Image: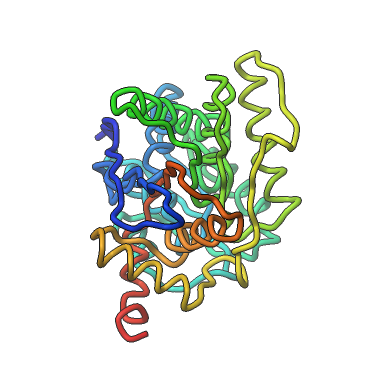
Amino acid sequence: MSINIDTTPIQKLNMRLNDNAIFIKRDDLIPFSFGGNKARKAKLFFEDLESQKSDCVVTYGSSSSNHCRIVANLAASKGLKCIVISPVETSKTTFNSQMMEFFGAEIISCKVSEVKDTIDRELSRLTVEGYKPYFIEGGGHGNLGTKAYIEAYEEIRTFELDNNIRFDYIFHTSGTGTTQAGLVCGKLINRDDRQIIGISNARKNPYGGQVVLDSVNSYLGHIGEDGVGSEAIDFIDDYVLDGYGAYNNDVLEVIREVLIIDGIPLDTTYTGKGFWGMTEYIKENQIRGKSILFIHTGGTPLFFDDLEVLVND
């Protein structure tokens, strides 16, 4: 089983904000395991895994991780052993964690401070047992994850040419950083003039922005391009609230509005929080009369985790 990614649709939303035209790129519709940005990235990682003839996969992520769900599903589809290292600090039962178990992934919980040692230990154990393990960083971090969103950026440019439109801003939820890094690299490679704005769902500056910058420069160096400075990165940490998984009534209201008006589910951990952050950023910076694209990076199972709160709020 491989992930077949045709160009995902871009649709105009019915909502209006400061007389801006708002569009959404539906990466949640990638046709594998509820789609999302992690499906784009996993496609490239598993192609690399197969080229190296690895026979099991190890990765890292929380119980809410879309990345770990996708990796576990792809591994199961190929009959590969899958081990997920998960931090106890953010451990709770979610639809994503239940699906990881359903796909047969072995979930090993540990403290965040013990993650690196746990990963190293498991990779060594698997090697001793005769496996050839393949490690994927949390969130699909690394040059392959960045490359996946350079490809998505090219899809956006093709849409613009085909529809005689130009997006002034591209917003998205920024987590581990390679989605934003890929979009920024796409912009730089094409010498485009627009803003790529990552709305952080957890990380704060300067660390969050530096991770994105490091990923950008890692990929640019990989292809022989000159690196860039921090001015190339718009990593906005104003809307993280109390951190990963935290949300408020305003986030719930945005999720409710987008679902009712346009029929598109967003979740409180990633896309709903990012979309809310985008609307706040637009208002606070008095952005008017522009064409704006939001990238739906997936997380549909997480929508159902908080459905009862959404309904009863």
